[in-house]
Length: 104
Image (cartoon, rainbow, N blue to C red; front, side):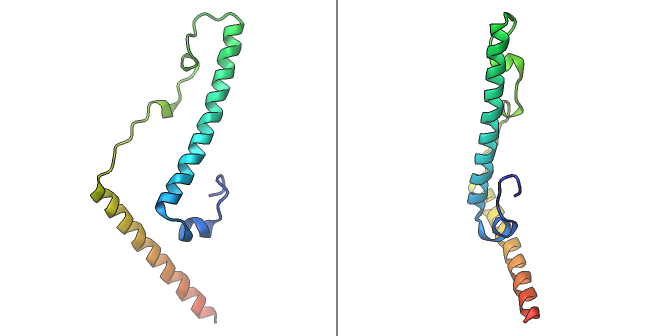
């Protein structure tokens, strides 16, 4: 939440799962782009200095996300996860409503 700049309450109670996923993926993509740019610059410098053992930036450093493989979830698995998240959100909303009514 802090790295992305989203308020805790908004993250936990107001955003939908797909919105959270989009935010996290965007943040990861931005971080990956930065690291890949640094690797490319380093590769160019190393090649300009005469290194002949590097044929690509990946020869300098291979990043973990370049090897990641994701397994697709079935529609039933997605529905099950959404139901679990809805149950947790309902529980937290009831707790919040209960806390606020006791203050009145």
